[in-house]
Amino acid sequence: MKIEIWSDVVCPFCYIGKRHMEQALEQLPEIDAEIIWRSFELDTEAPEHTDANINEVLAKKYGKDLDWAKQMNANMVKNAEDVGLDYNMDDIQPANSFKAHQLLHLAKENGLQDEMKEALLAAYFTEGKLISDSDTLVKIAEGVGLDAREAASVLEEETYKSAVRQDEHVARQIGIQGVPFFYINEKYGLSGAQPVKVFKDAFQQIESGNVATEQ
Image 1 (cartoon, one colour):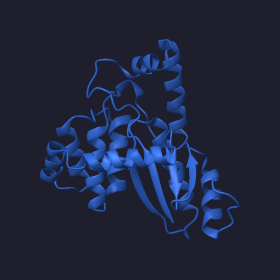
Image 2 (image 1 turned 90 degrees about the horizontal axis):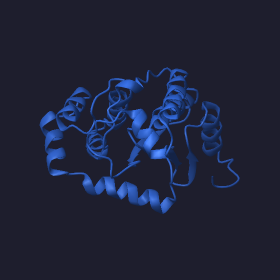
Image 3 (image 1 turned 30 degrees about the vertical axis):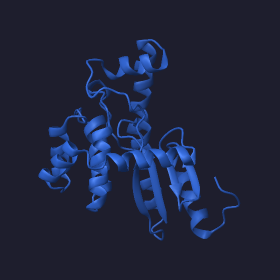
Image 4 (image 1 turned 120 degrees about the vertical axis):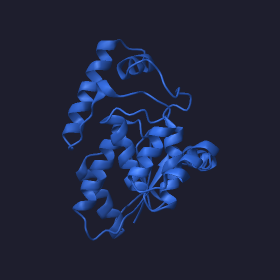
């Protein structure tokens, strides 16, 4: 089963959705899943660094006040805890994710994409790292087993810029408007951080061929 996932490393629902998918697959050992992470930037114009905290960024994005944003983030922390994730929202450094997506393509070429995806999500949501900073990204890449010099070169030369843009182009073609989006066997789509049972049921139906219509 081929599962392509469009997501962003600064998307809190994407990390939760990743865990839900993983838990569903753990309950279905008979399914041999190929996981491919595709690039999707929630905000292509986001600055590489800002002095604003995540509450201020969220409030501005949705035209709400700070209290609303704080409550939303508090709810997100609780949702993350439910799947064993530790979101440190006060430590998050809002950033542009374009460089991080390029390293995910490098990691894919080296068979380490899932490890890189996990490391980037943890770096942003748990460890409070600036994931637009090249030195920080190189260290993350090295930590999952990638060559530090190659990672640095990829970022400097924007080696995978076109690959990131191609993923985003395909997303538009498919009609993806939000992430995470799970595209299964290039035919069936599942949008959002669905509950584990929804993933499990969908995977079972697709694997058995008992899907009446495309999602």
